[in-house]
Amino acid sequence: MESERIWLLYTAEKQERRKNLTKSTPPLRTIIAMESERIWLLYTAEKQERGKNLRKSTPPLRTIIVIVSIVILVLVCASLLASVSVHSLPFATVDAEGISGSQPAKVHNLVQGKWIGSSTWNTIVDPLNGEPFIKIAEVDETGTQPFVESLSQCPKHGLRNPFKSPERYLLYGDITAKAAHMLSVPKVSDFFTRLIQRAAPKSYQQALGEVQVTQKFLENFSGDQVS
Image 1: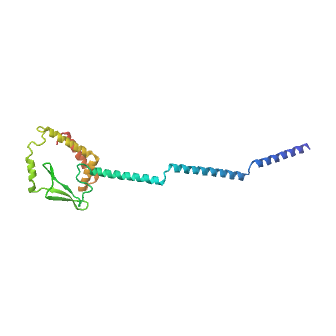
Image 2 (image 1 turned 90 degrees about the vertical axis):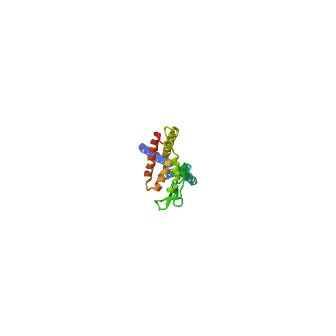
Image 3 (image 1 turned 180 degrees about the vertical axis):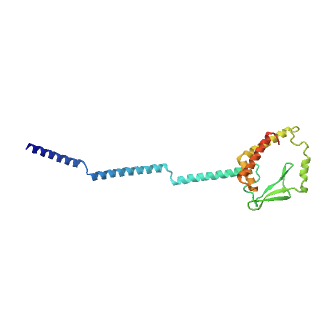
């Protein structure tokens, strides 16, 4: 009898614990549903936070368009300024890219310190289309008199004699040095390179090589104070 009473008490206590556990612990389906909802809420909140940060860090489309337009405008202006700087060389009388049959370049003769034309012109055709695009002043027998007079005014010892006119000898040595320096300036060397290309079928590097050789020659020439 005592054993039966103990068994009944144990059974009653076990059933009571099971009831309490059932009341305090939700079913597995409820736990899974609650956990899934919690994970979804966390994912949604994180996604919204990333969207806010992305909108903060990424400028709107209008801002991007304005920035790109400004960059393009700056590049165009830089290109135009570079073109103007090349064409505005103080000694340039022609535009290498603008020489054509409708706008021919003219080569004059230097006599008594002045550039003069001629009544007779020889022409050079454009290697690209065959149009006469360079005119060269020709000198025939009737037009040699100004040159003869200029030569007759020059003394036998020359105008830049190192003994009788040392100041002019040194002056023209400096002029040659400055000419060499000018040819070393990129926009000046590019100007003469383009001119060579317009009159001769050469690549840019070939034409530039001629300019560079001339620059080195003048540099060496001026070092000897030769004019």
